[in-house]
Length: 347
Ligand code: SAH
Ligand code: SF4
Image (cartoon, rainbow, N blue to C red; front, top):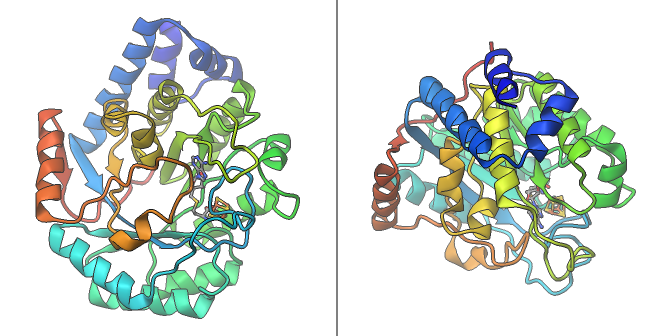
């Protein structure tokens, strides 16, 4: 087993059975070595710097009906909201004042936020914050829409592939959505020059260890700039209300494996990880993650952006919040990375 870890670290890939063995391994010492090794590689590439992204949840309206997500259109119990461009600019201004140099605009696929609106909002952000990176996470769009967003000044796009297995994708999504289209969107984004992020939930209903191996192979072959992974957490107004949540331990293991596969990748310790366990995000950083995405949305929007239950807002609203995070990071031997924190090109 130790040989597998050595091989992953030196060759940056394993065959399917190698990945499977690591994912199923119950040798605690070896898993500790895996995390340590992944952190060492992160330190070599990025040092102890952790990049912060200011996350704005801009709308919880969604035309889609993903079976796992609390924002799905058939959830009639949530209060729907969308931020105005002015509210987004105000939040960005506040976040900039605190020190953020990347803004992430995430939301459901809200039909009211058409291309012209996204373009104008991104354009305003680009103009007012020329030194900042703008990341979008607004779901599946046409190639033309992505091109408009890029030309308006967006740099990065997060679109988790969710699962690379066709059958599993169909279990998680209604039939009007398709894995092929999701992957097509990711390919367009890459071609258009976005720093692109894929990723998956860990422990989503029906997920097998073989599915995760397929995810790892896809991540290896597509060489994304970012990979977002967090445990699945059930939401009571979804068809998966009574399913079991994903495992923190397995999420940490996947973070370490992805780090060893792609040493230069940007890996967030996600909100879902923090929501499952106090200290979950810090554990993610120790396993090889190097990005945190604190919430900087207006307070009024936070409760309603309920992808899953008991979501930990992980917000930074004041300079005291920023300093507290800085102290917690320092106690764990990390520091806040100043600047945009762009990805590196995979060799
Ligand atoms: N609408 C966009 C962005 C918002 S959803 C999109 O779908 O890409 C952002 C991510 O939240 C999704 O990609 C999914 O991986 C995650 N998510 C949704 N529901 C979740 C749940 N119940 N548990 C954990 N993560 C969830
Ligand atoms: Fe909409 Fe994204 Fe939730 Fe799917 S995961 S229902 S696209 S917000």
